Length: 177
Image 1 (cartoon, rainbow, N blue to C red):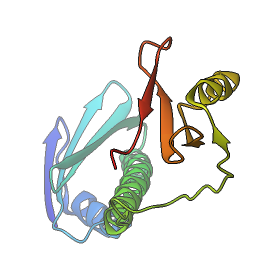
Image 2 (cartoon, one colour):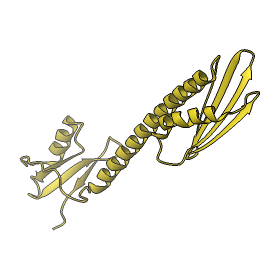
Image 3 (cartoon, rainbow, N blue to C red):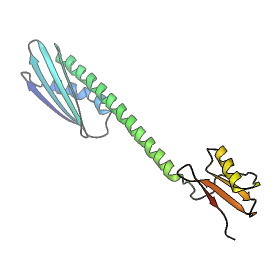
Image 4 (cartoon, rainbow, N blue to C red):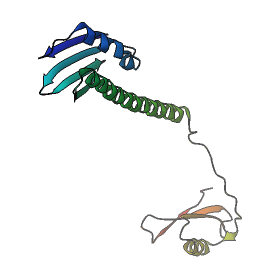
């Protein structure tokens, strides 16, 4: 921990330095890295103003308080900084947790391999021998269906009648042999 104390209109005594060093474990407990503390103390009118800045790993926290007693002002700064740091850590931890959950979900989605070109549904229905005209009429009765498989009465072979894209006309599929 690096502590720098600057005084404007007030001399930074050893007692003040010791007091700040004694209070810093309240801030240090939140960080594993080295922290830098810049403390500025000054006097304006009847008040003692303490300004504290804490920098850690690119993050900066700041508190400024005024009180008649300099030690009370330092205590308020520590309280404010501790609150800011707790809020920041909670927010950061929640974000890291959310990011971790998103990564795990993505990995799970990537691990699920969907089978390609597989038959996933089988329908069974009775094929009755009918004429192509009757098949067309049956297909018209069911607008949700796009095709109908039937046995052609005239050729006794399996045929398929289907709706063309224009929605008005029909196509017929017959085997050659």
